[in-house]
Image (cartoon, rainbow, N blue to C red; front, top):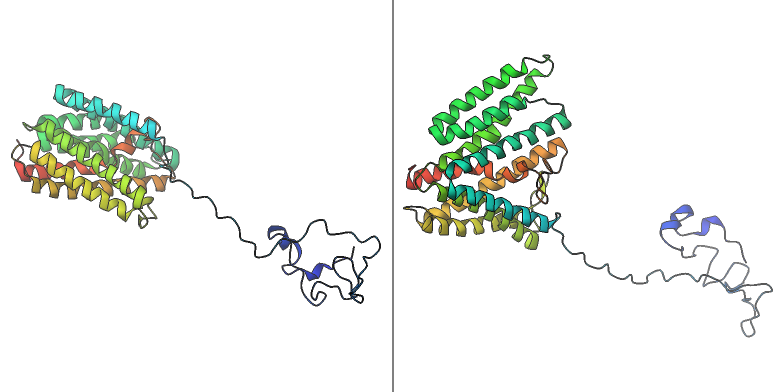
Length: 349
């Protein structure tokens, strides 16, 4: 076999390993022949009428592949939801049953459910802050103050919620004084943020419940938020191509936001017309629009927190959903918005 020099490869050296066999070209090769007149299949060029193979010439064992041979197109990949959809649906239905049963049987039981969700959410948030950032927000005063905040909002309205928030903040400041001063400022700052973000915003759900049709107001609030998230997911998964906030949440799309708005506006019109005393459909359209915006911003806000912490979910308590905070992200900022619009549209009682 003729020896081919190393410098005749089109790509050269080790580069050929990931390109397949290189096509032979250059000054040593013309029309498939070597410089001495020998064909590459082992015959002489001088005698084309009776070309004889060279002694001991062997036929090439691995013929060169066609350089421009078409490659089969890759099979299209099916879109994936990214989570265990069966578990997510099962957990969602279970939570819905608990909420509806407590909401329409005894209002005080529903307030207890909200308080428990607040305490668990605070535990998840403070745990992740300590694990990922070394921030030790005091959980005990936050949990006790958070539960008291929800009860105060139900029993005494907005004034009770503000007073409970103030005392919770004071308790956080004092509780942290029992430990060394290093990191005091960041710990109490995180504690005050947690007190406002989770229990204080949740008190508006309890305040909605105090109206005569309070159970239906809370149901409208929950339905619109869930429908907004569902519309965003369904439309975004099927039609989404333009990213909404790729640096914060790459999965969200502008098409999904349009779906959230449309779904929430339709649901809002139906709920205000048929569930809320003295409500009208046009109020529901406006309510749905605002809920879609607040729910999306709430989701993006928690996504920003999770990106800063370097985590995907706040917890693992709810299979297919993550943690409690992963379900409260849209609900918390939406609660004061719905409470305020309900008061403006139909009053507080």
